[in-house]
Length: 79
Image (tube, rainbow, N blue to C red; front, side, top):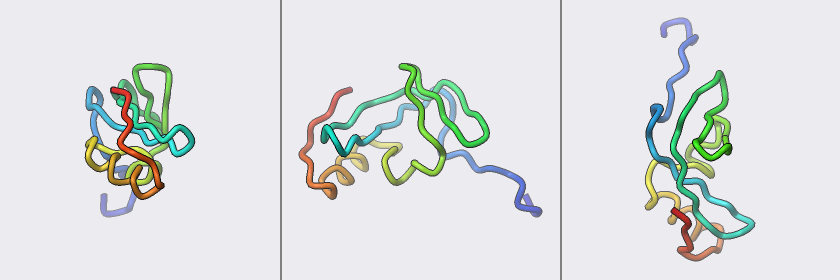
């Protein structure tokens, strides 16, 4: 940690996360099943990169809804 070599993960395997899709104006729920160096795999063959957390992938549905509203979308959600 002192040398800056640790990666702090935003969640753990088994957690639910919520992904905002700016094109469809929807929020989709995903279950984390695997981590790689910079990538997080979900249970439905989707994935994201660690830098997406806090931008388009969130740990709560409420955060995802707030971001979607910021994009000009509604509260549509597929869970």
